[in-house]
Amino acid sequence: MATVAGGSDYYEFKYPFIKRASSFWASSSSFSSSNTDEASYDYIIVGGGTAGCPLAATLSQNFSVLVLERGGVPFSNVNVSFLSNFHIALADPSPTSASQPFVSTDGVINARARVLGGGTCINAGFYTRANSGFIRRVGWDERLVNESYPWVEKQIIHQPKLAQWQGAFKDSLLDVGVSPYNGFTYDHIHGTKVGGTLFDRFGRRHTAAELLASANPKMLTVLVYATVQKVLFDQTAGRRPMAMGVIFKDENGNQHQAFLTNNRRSEVILSCGAIGTPQMLMLSGIGPKAELDKLNISMVLRNEFVGKGMADNPMNSVFVPTNRPVEQSLIQTVGITKMGVYIESSSGFGQSQDSIRCHHGISSAEIGQLSTIPPKQRTPEAIQAFIKRKQDLPHEAFKGGFILEKIARPISTGHLNLVNTNIDDNPSVTFNYFHHPQDLQRCVDGIRMAAKVIQSKHFTNFTRCDKPTVEKLLNMSVKANINLIPKHTNDTKSLEQFCKDTVITIWHYHGGCHVGKVVDPDLKVLGTNRLRIVDGSTFNESPGTNPQGTVLMMGRYMGVKILRRRLGKAAHV
Image 1: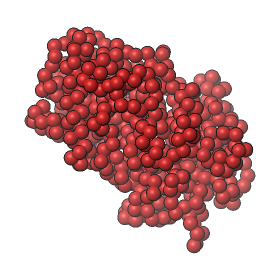
Image 2: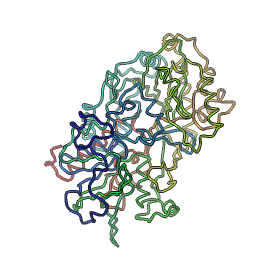
Image 3: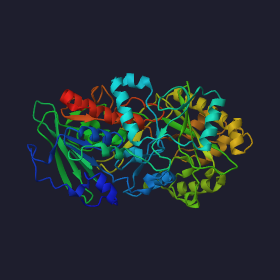
């Protein structure tokens, strides 16, 4: 096969089914919907991400599967592969970067994945299972869930070597009452725990893409740089729209069509994530009437709920000064409180002079809020303000760390709207952070707890700093936190104002295609045939402290469920 996007011989040997999109020989003029030859597939999965990869690996055991991924491969990308480059990957604004930045209308800088392996390639690596209540609320089979998590864990999850910073953080959490200590566990239980990680002991990242190694290579085709533009439907009058295939473009901009086999149980499965899936549905003609009309998209099926109920878990961070150098650590320890707030920590983003000087657009490594601002919003004033703020930051900001508090289940929700019909462009997303007073109150409680953690003797002994006042901590944090929300003079006096003005994201957004509104409990798109969604756009809440473990499991779970429904015991899964 041709070399894949800088891939090595080793990966070509291990993943012979991964090819560039331009190698797809079926041009759009070659096929009709009645096509039944070798270029039709039992399953077409749009998006080879956190859910798409385990789903593809599972379905390929018995059926032909085509995965279409708009990004490249992660294997030879040093920004993806090494923990030390975590923030550089997120700060890379180039069109082929594994991370695509977007800014919500709230003014919060955010990112979505654009690479085989999805969010597992650009996140902070923390792995945990969902809270048991989540599994019950979504109505999943607990036995199959408990079989599907280990399938993922055995292949790509590791027990972290606890960084000193994380150890001090753990002792401080226990000191302020986030107990008991539950040790190393994947389970979501109240108290303080150490979770799993995608990073091995050498600091090398393992991603969802590696789950493809357990696929049946004879039944799987994965195309990278394959950007799906819309789902194709058979719209015979008087019948439900039936998915037939997709149109996609390759890395050279050439159009292709891929079709399902004629079997009524073949499916197009959208796994484009909470931003990409509602966008894909609307561009394919399924969504709110006004939304489709404004861009002259011909309607396949009216559904006013597509893109509604979007939510993101608001996060705020408190800077921790230190008088000693600290090693880099991403999330390893977490405090699961009983007040609906999760407390996490990261440290040591200034590992090199390059890191400190690295131009991060309007955002920077010291806050874990690492992306760039779109060119249209790069005003000279914004750039100058950013440069000044960065100069004003004490050098310790690059040596220290942050305590992060995240709201568990925000009540505030927003919506997603199309800006244009170009799938490469981000849609407009509004999360309405803190619109509900209960969310704001929980943030205030979380900030108070974060401050207590930093003031605890375990942390002050570790950082070799005097016990800082809350106002001093907030003052440093306001300077370091970069978003596009105007700051107020009372940010350090009012915790409510601090929360609203310094809100950032930890990339746990979800919703837009909810069960009962856009999909049925089996995640099939309501009012259609042969179209299903398997990703976090179907979630009403973000599972556990960090959702990636559950999204990985979901891919395996739905794959097994589909195989068992279709083949019974003959599925052998």
